[in-house]
Image (cartoon, rainbow, N blue to C red; front, side):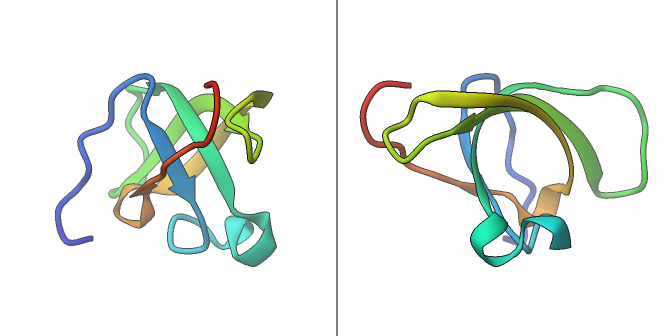
Length: 81
């Protein structure tokens, strides 16, 4: 993605290896965003607070993740959020 996504609370994101190597392959997350931490960090990197979603769209774990904004992708969810 050449342009940065505009991130808004409630958005559902796919966080995979392009966002951070720790989320490559089977470790990828579907993540409902709560907030973007406003503190300054490395250029192009963000701390995000949110919930990891199950395959049905249910929140299963609250997480804080450190990711490259350029690697984030929108994701669809099935069922309730």
